[in-house]
Amino acid sequence: MTMFSNLIRFTQEKTEYLYENSLFLQNIDKLIFASVIAVFVSSTVMSSDVIGFIALITVFLTIVKILTKPDERLDCKNFELWLLAYFMIVIISLAGSTLFHLSLKGFFKTFTYLAFYFSMVQFFKNNKDKVPYVLAAIGICAGFEAAAGFLQNFAHVDEISTWQDVSKLNPEEVMTRVYGTLKPYNPNLLGGYFVACIPSLYGLAAYFFIDKKYKLSAAGLILALLSTITLFLTGCRGSYIGMMVIFMGMFAVSAKYLWNNYKQIYLTAVGSVIALGTAAVLFVSSLRARVLSIFAMRQDSSNSFRFNVYNSSVEMFKDNWLLGIGVGNQNFREIYGLYMKTGFDALSAYNIFLEIAVESGIFALIAFMGFLITLIKNSINFILKSTDTKAVIMASAAIISVIAVCIHGLVDTVFFRPQIQFVFWTMVAAARTIIFTTDNRL
Image (cartoon, rainbow, N blue to C red; front, side, top):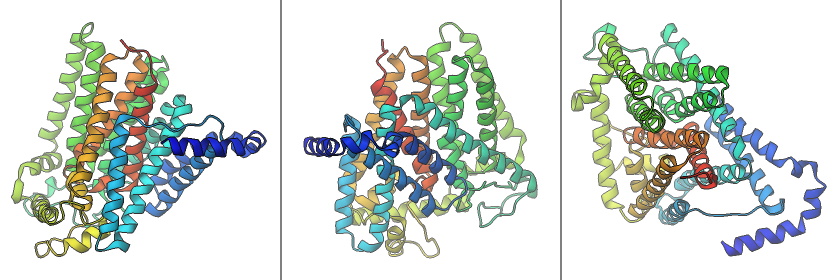
């Protein structure tokens, strides 16, 4: 780190005159902010390649900023050491992959995601006040997808592929699974996207309410409720679980402020949400059938498919436990063919932690888990101890999103799509910025 700091300081000294006389460099933070917003906006309608290209523009601008802006510094928090270790292990796994050219493509994707996280950290470091604006951009994009999905439900859009097992369902129990405008069209992708984005909407509603901006608070709450309804219309059962995690997180955080002085209001709100959810499951036949299918085990074809993938992926891990097979879904698919049961091809392990273990080995999994556990621990400590209500709300929204995405990722593969990855790493960067730069603690 010292070597990099010295190199950065050297380049900053050599480009000081250029920085002071360049309109482009003087406004580079504004350009970075614009490119970040462009990443989220493009995620709603563009292909993965276009989204990644825009994200790389953000990374490029950040590097230029670091090399030219005086006093710009790098620092590393404890949980980021785990992330650095994870990335180094991924590089070693890449070098040892038997399908190097395919693994190289997956490595470039991983590099782009982590470089974008690095860029968000550097941006938020000097622009902490922009965290609510970035979360608002994410929330507005989620609101757009919610409106699109809500309209698709009434249009009764046809399935593009086999998205649910209808062999044992009555016609009224078959759900119209909405998929929004995210590419590739997939209701599970839309459900996972909502899991990542919805905490920002509920967080902004509370943030603006505390700030006495009631119209903005109401708008945030309306978009949050619309997104929550549309999430259930996706029929993505993993996102149902993720949404339950979001509600539990919000209830846990709000208890800090409501339990002592507003206990009755708190219990009423919690009870109302539980009652409303239970009523929806009981009286909406298609939703009830979809929820109950979670517990059908092998009786549901989708569940059975995942169990087959899990079994085959575990066998892959046993044979490649040290360094894995190399990162990337194309690499996974090629080698999975040697382990799969006939007729059960798969793009990934349908579990992000099993996927990491298969792709990069046991030590990569340990490093990634260490990163998550340390981040979550630091965030919870901050939420419990801080007296800055606005900071707590923003940190809570960010870490609830991170946890919910990981829980959803236990049973699905969409975690590795760029629409979710860029939101995920932005939430990590937002949590990091808030918990390490807010001094108002008990």
